[in-house]
Image (cartoon, rainbow over all chains, first blue to last red; front, top):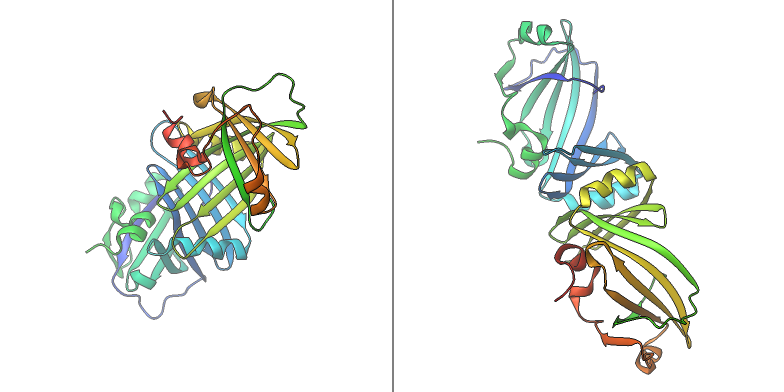
Length: 156
Length: 156
């Protein structure tokens, strides 16, 4: 995501039509090395490129420090995330003026499909008419955040 | 410390004689960004040089990943360690065949003085006759470990 304001909407997807014209595809996985109050330490493998992120939210201080780590270190830290992981295949597709990312979860969350749409402004977000293969909107549902999915698993 | 087996003994110090012939001195501080079970994420400033360490102990997995971070990032992470910090001035002195490190704590732990002596082997450790300015030995006292000092403060 670019810096600045993000406007995103998130939808469940029941099943994907066969004829979608994907722009690209990559494998993503992230896991939580430590969760301590408002601080999270996570490691992420974006198609073979590893990053370590320390994020603190809530309260007056907001910190997000993100750094590249080499594969050996990334994998060593990944070992510490067992039971707190999200693994998915991310594909992108253009839909009208919007870019849609579809995450197909793997591992413990296999079967979950979520589409995220990013908008330039509120007007575009409000005007968005979801394609018919989108299911219920879950933009405001915290259970579908990465951390919640990793820790609590797939919402019932 | 070098890799391999460390043999160390730790002693409280009530007060330092004035005439000690220090070899060197540096400022150390470390704080805990996240503590989560057997995993700790800490940031350390060794006289202006910052490192981030993720350590997991206990159980069958032991991981210690240590990486340099720049000053801006070190200080940003330091902000997250409030209330879980150890700050000290470390001085070294030779004593017989042994190297003695004396840590004079600052900040919340001000007043605490601890000497650590490192040995090459068990025989040297057993034969060590502490100088008269050493107080009680606390080698086996977990309350004097960095993490305990940072979280629980000075032992009563």
